[in-house]
Image (cartoon, rainbow, N blue to C red; front, top):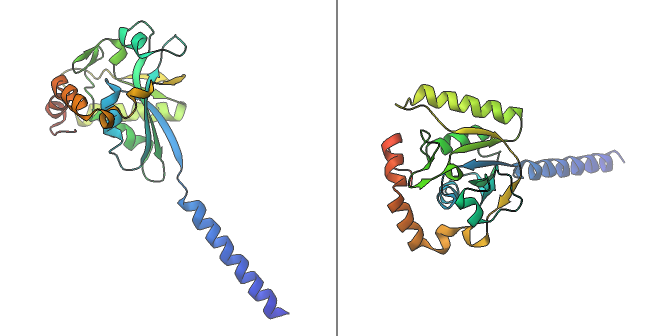
Length: 203
C-alpha cells in the first residue's frame, strides 16, 4: 500500500513538472504600435529582429474610422503610418523593442521620414498604459544622453487608440514585391540617412 502511494505521488510530481515546463516554454505575447515613416520598411526591419512574432502594417492616431491608404497618405485622416509589433516578452522586452526602433528612424524630424513628407509619416511611439509611457520616456532620455544630435529629438509619444490594419497588398510588401521595395528604399535614402545618424547601416 505504501509502495503504491509512493509510486502515485512520484507520477503526480513528474506530471506537474512536465506541465510546468510546457507552461514555461509558452510565448508571452505583447505588442507595441510604432510609427517610423513608410510601414513597408519598418515592417521589414522588425521582422528581422529575434523575439518578434508578427508585424502588421497599419494606421493609428487619426479621427476617421476604417481609413484607407489613399486617405492616410493624403494626410486628411489624421492617422500615422505605423506597424503593430507582436513579440515574445520571454525573449525580448519592451525597452529593447524601443531601442531597436530608435536606430531605424530619423528621430530629429517630425515632418516625415526620409523621402516621405507629411505628419502621416512622422515618428511616434504609441504607449498602452502608464508603465509603457514611463519606459518610453526613459528610452527617450537614454537616447538624448547617449547619442546627442545637433537637433532635438522629435519622436512623439501618443496614447494608443484604435489600430487599423492596412490593406492586404501592403502586408509583407518587401516579400511580395522585392524589386519595387528595394528600389523605393534605396531611392528614399533611408539606409544612408540611418547610417549617417547612427554610424552603421541598419538595412
